Length: 252
Ligand code: NAD
Image 1 (cartoon, helix red, strand yellow):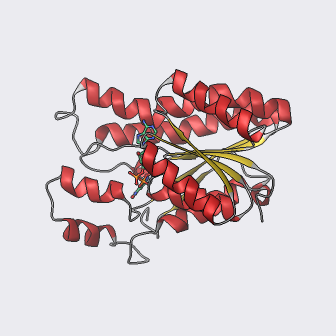
Image 2 (cartoon, helix red, strand yellow):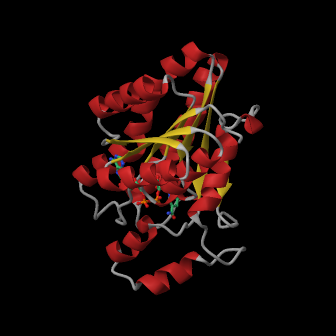
Image 3 (cartoon, helix red, strand yellow):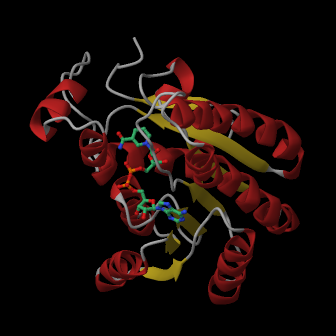
């Protein structure tokens, strides 16, 4: 029970990595707010946690919207009485080059992948600081560290997540707030399957290629969740500003 008594927000909590992390947080004793654009799927994850004896609420929100972020935080504070942990994980990908990317798509990717984290931190840091600290984990990507093909807005946005994480850690470390990024490689989620569709590729072939790394397989959402639990918990009490890579060796 490494998160006993902690109050946590998970954005994108209805998706592959977010759902696994919501369940893992709850299994470690945290109260969890499952935040997602997909209201029904978020409600199902919260129900799954409650059915297992945990504490959870679902909040439907678009994390790129400041009024939505303020509403999420108000709901969590009113239901749980505070916020100790935030996993800023909601994200989207567009598999296009610079030439193929419209300004609207660029802005949408940055809105969800980057602005949302800024907005969450803008509004949650004062609450954590007043309570003496907290832990924020942001989902970057292996492609935010090394780049990747046909995903210009995504790679740029995830690079921004990694460096914004460092900047947040510098600014708010003195307030007892740790901020780290977790950087997955290819993980078996809806996002990866959607990428095959966007690229017009055969799904089985695309997923097989994703296994081309030293550990010779894709990651599972629970393996990212395990790393996030560690970063969220006091077990990582001297870790801040770090970019933890969880990718089966794909960065090599
Ligand atoms: P997923 O598509 O399964 O889940 C993403 C979730 O985010 C979905 O439930 C979706 O509804 C939600 N979401 C999207 N836009 C939102 C918005 N504006 N507001 C609120 N919720 C929103 O994808 P996943 O693979 O679980 O991705 C989670 C994170 O991990 C993302 O940031 C992604 O970029 C990152 N990531 C994934 C992989 C991978 O291989 N799957 C690799 C590296 C990084």
